[in-house]
Image 1 (spheres, rainbow, N blue to C red):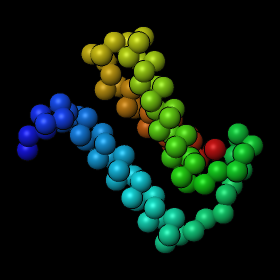
Image 2: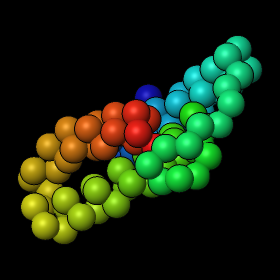
Image 3: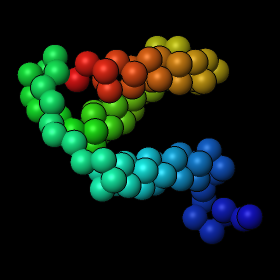
Image 4: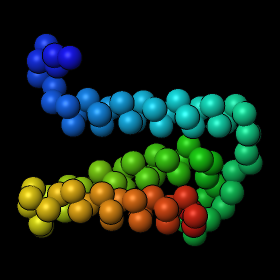
Length: 93
């Protein structure tokens, strides 16, 4: 499949496919298993969608900071930090 029509790379395409998939899965979960908002350590009420947004936003900052401090050659290790961050957000926020 040729992605050159939009100057995309495969990692960029995969990134947006993962984001779209997450949104679809979380929409299905919200329809199938409605939830009531809960209050976590931030002392605000959050739903699964809110926690997903906080996770994605925080992961973007983690990756930018990692890129700035560690350089691009160690960037895949930021995924481990992002996964730990996501687990913490979904558990405690």
